[in-house]
Image (tube, rainbow, N blue to C red; front, side, top):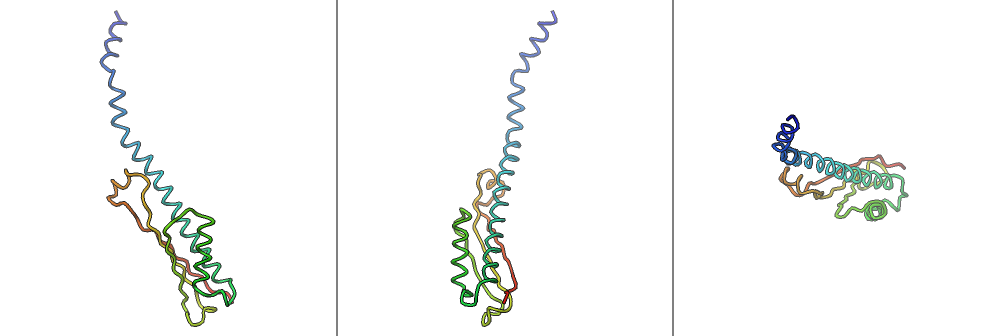
Length: 142
């Protein structure tokens, strides 16, 4: 008689696991995709920081004839092409003393449009892209 009672109880709970899974799945996916999106966003921000740092380092230790903006931008473009798989990175190079680039500071500014990986995060935030930027200022060595 006890076996019949347990079988009846189990028959009434057939859809319970499926209902619990359906309730927990959206929260689980949101957390999972949030972790993936944050990791990819963090990687891109670090890549922009490294691009600026590499360009600034090249600008401050290069010789006097290499202190042209085009040469620094070419070096940064080569660095990006060799190191990262990033597209559409805009970089600007400015000197605090443009008439005498061998003294003062060099400022490297990089910007990139970041497109979200997952549609869930873009639905939650309400935007498809985000602008990432980085800036490095270094003293020119002479």
